[in-house]
Image (cartoon, rainbow, N blue to C red; front, side):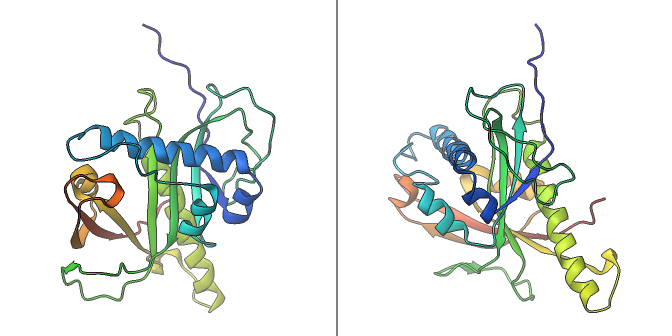
Length: 237
């Protein structure tokens, strides 16, 4: 059996202004995020009502939820695109710019937004540090077997991590203190425990708190736990 052909881009970074200028790209990111959410729910039909609540309900919700400071990492497959009109995108933060066009298939995504401590009743696990940093959201990979479990999600997150570290390096250098080794960025994830809590802990993320969410939230028929996990950035060359 022949191996399916892929022609994957590196993770390309997009800021909010670039996404506003690329509605077709936004639609593809939304579609992948919604498909991945439904995929997780289908695995437990007795617990979740699939497709009742979308991860991204509308373009307006997409931008409102993620804010003005969001940074996206997107991987495209140029061997598996759609027949659509050409478009351009600025690969901000990437060594390659203007790579993507509307014919390319979006196969992996991840977003980073400034961290805001969740409100509500949470079981705290003391960690003794001020909560600041960046949260990874919507870490998703296309369900096609040629993309799943190939490290694409990790590649997106590492691209974001590099960009966030570089951002902090520039802030530090502006104060006259050089040296990437002095920079540490606190990273955060909020995960649904029964879907991927174990996965993130295996990746080295440390649980800080958790909370039980009730029947009806996100199409849940029973209840589920949300967990807040964190780790410090690594120096990535």
